[in-house]
Amino acid sequence: MTGANLPPLDSPEVVSLHRKMKRRNNRGRIFTYISAILISLWILIPIFFVFSMAFTTEDTVRSYPKNFLPFVPFSTETMSFFLQSEGVLRGLLNSVIVAVITLVLSTVIAVPAGYAIARYLFPGRDLFRLAVLAVRAFPIVVLSIPLAVLFLRAGLFDSVFSLALMHTALALPTTILVVSSVFASVPYELEEAGQVFGATPLQSFRYIVTPLVLPGIAASGLFTFVLSWNEVFAASVLTLENRTLPALVLTSLANSSDSFQFAGGFFLMVPSIIFMFFIRRYLFNMWGQVSK
Image 1 (tube, rainbow, N blue to C red):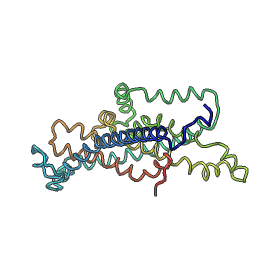
Image 2: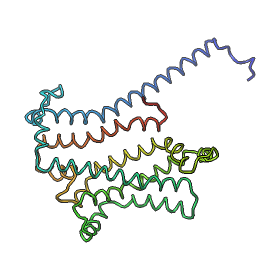
Image 3: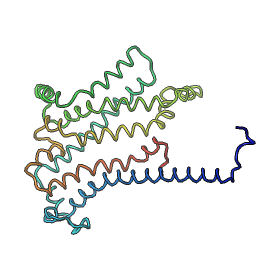
Image 4: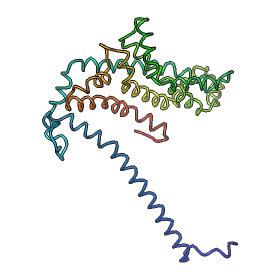
C-alpha cells in the first residue's frame, strides 16, 4: 500500500481505531492498578492488624469479634506485657548484635569477592560461581546437627558470635552473586579513564566505582540484615541461653498468650521496616529512580 492509498488521519476509520487502542490501553492500565492495589492490601492488611493488636489491651486482643476501628482502645498494655516477659529484652539485643555482625562480615567478604569475580578472568571462575551458589542449596536442616556437634567441640556453642558466623555463611552466596552482578554492570572503561587522568587503581575504585555500586551493596546489605533477623532454625538449634528474639518467640508460642504473639510479631517486623525506610533511597537509585 502506497502513501497515496492511506486514509487521512481524521477519517472515521482512523479515529475509530485510535479510540479502540486508547480503550484497550486504559483497560490494561486499570487492570495493572487494581492488581497492584490487591497485592498491596494482601501484604499490608495482616501487618496493620498485627500492629493494631500490639497497641491495645489484652482483653481486646482476646475478644471476638474484633473492633472495626483499629487501635481502639489504644494501650501499651500488650507491649509492656511482652517486654516484661522473661528473656525478651536479652533476645532483642542478641538479634541486633547477630544481625549487625552478619551484615558487616558479609559485606566485608562479599565486596572483594564480587569485584574479583566481575573484573578478573581466572581458571575455574564459572566453577567458583557454581560452588558459591551450591553452598546455598544445602538445607540448614541437614547441616544443623553436624554444626551443633562442631560448635560444641570447638567451644562455640550457644554463642552470639558463632550464630553470626552461621548467618554469614547462609547469606554469603547470594550476597556475593548480587555484588558481583552490580560490579559487572559498571563498565571497566570508567576505571581505566580515571587511571588515564592520574588516579591510582585504588582511587579509581574509591571515587568512581564505589558511588555507582553503593545502591547494590546497600540492597545486598538489606537482604543480609533481614535474613539474619528473621532466621529461626539455626538460632533455635545452636543456642540455648543466648537465643535471638525469633528463636525465643518460636519456642514460646505453644505456651504463650495471644497478646504475647501479636507483640512478638510486631517486634519481629519493626526492625526490618525501619531498615528498609533508611535504605530506600539506595534501592530507588538502583532501580533508576531519584529519591530526595
